[in-house]
Length: 204
Image (tube, rainbow, N blue to C red; front, top):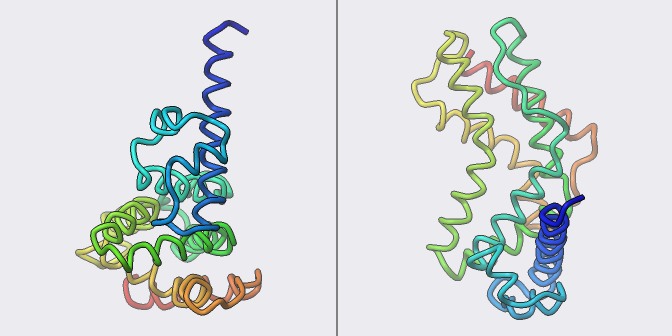
């Protein structure tokens, strides 16, 4: 292994340490009370190292959400297939979504994000936009199915948001705002199948 590989591995380790420390700080203190100084101290790195990786607390928080999304990934996001049944494809997309929404770390951080957003509408818009980037898979799939003539919608983003709402009404908002337990596998399947059937009854 050459020196550049060694440096890269050290850099990756420091980045992972910062993210791990930030998760602990956000959960313990909330978004506003968490400082980059506290994150640096918990990660045992310099404040400069933290800023080298993440120019702001908002960017760091978004990176954490993205990491949680990626870690919940159960494989490649299924691309639209002209030859496969729509319901089967939709259920694959929804099961991936539900596996993230069932992650207690993600739900905990979503609570932090929502609490922070209440005090700062501008920050809330930014966080919603960043989380929305992670929900683009469904919009892309709907757009492709509509282009193929198998779904009838002139606004794939709106249709995608409707579908997200059907799922989150059971698998996100009750857990984040009311402390309900995450859904069981059977409950996840029931929510996914019901949401897919309602969606296809409207758009297929």
